Image (cartoon, rainbow, N blue to C red; front, top):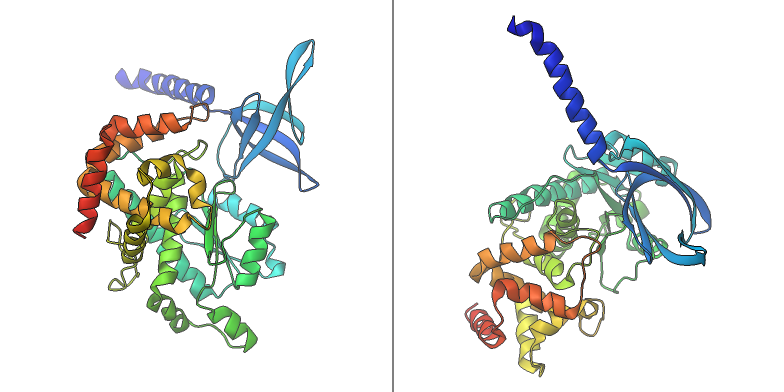
Length: 397
């Protein structure tokens, strides 16, 4: 008799769950807009909708921000710059699958123009114009960072999620193509910058830093896997890939909310914390807080000559310090030092601080005062004692 009623009951329960998921999932939004003089159509979800800006995330994970203004004509109506039309229905938002993402990428990066594609069988898709061997090498390193970075922080009581979207890395064959691509995306690169993570496209872009591909294209010789072993002998190349991978993974597993203003010192501090190569390992990298000798040397020089009353406070408040060539190196070094100190000496407080930032949303306030309040809530307000302990910690390294 029990079995007679089990199936109708199961159908009822599953129907309730499905209806609940439809009700709670964001509705799919269809937006037609102008970008770079061309009309585009995208499906996605609204992330920000206010009187100043409209933020829309497409199903491939790309984020579009449009300026909004209030037009007064009887009632207040918000008009969004470059939006031609928009509508929504009751279909829930679902990110692209890997197969769907691959088809979209082939439209953007036509195979007829020399682009190839590699599925790493993890969350990554590699779009490349380099050799297959180099693309494989990058894919292996990216997958290792994704797995090991998330594992490391979960073990330290940081709540993380799986990536919602397939992760895309664009690997180009030469520095020239790489810099042309950055210009097209509106990215201002430092002269020595060899890779970047773009928060709006949610992609890593880099190039064959070994120079093997450009050399062999000029000499009409095929690249073989042994050629790519040179990558392992150049720690700077490994550091570059890992640094950007930490950014991309961090913004996709919930370490940092992607749609809010995050303190730059923290996400750059985590990247320089984990970027240190380990050429003793066959992958060239192992996770965890290693002493970053170049950053430590830079930090000691900086602290030895600075006359600022509190460079840490200034860095916590000053995101632009990282984009100014005159202050960037010093503040990257200070971000490494502070992050390394917190991981080693204040891990529980650091996990609490990360939780405060993880819970912020696009409407959350961000100001110099709020940043200091958030920091002091976890690490205390006695800055003299904090900085004294920090300096003493550095001296023992």
